[in-house]
Length: 160
Image (tube, helix red, strand yellow):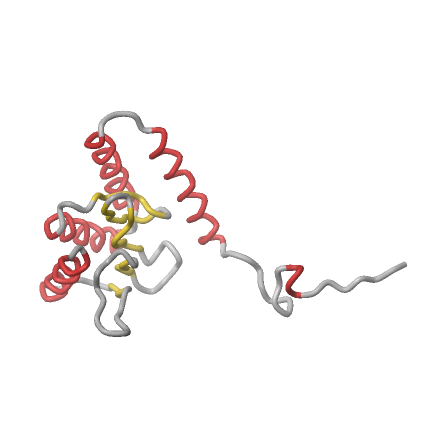
């Protein structure tokens, strides 16, 4: 009987510790694939497609646990008011806001990846550049009026 050794690189493991993506990450990827298929299958004008995408975002927000839902609703309102040219869309099962189909910012509920806080994230499409280093993700546990003003300023800067 011949015994062969497989390397960590060929087996996809690192010293036996790598287990691949988490269940939450796999679910998010499947959800993203489903979102893309649904978006591609939609017929109608651009305005109809955008309205359907916003309905999808609002439905996803409505499904969230109360603490996340309250934050997501406020973030949605702030972004829609501050940057009405951004189009709501689902992105890996999360509410996101895009320009020309490219995500500029997104909201991630705490429950999505079993985190202790929700997050507001900005992609490389956001023009938040500030020197050689700047934050692109913000932890959210609640929103004060000052926080909302700060988020509004970030969104304005992000869209240029």
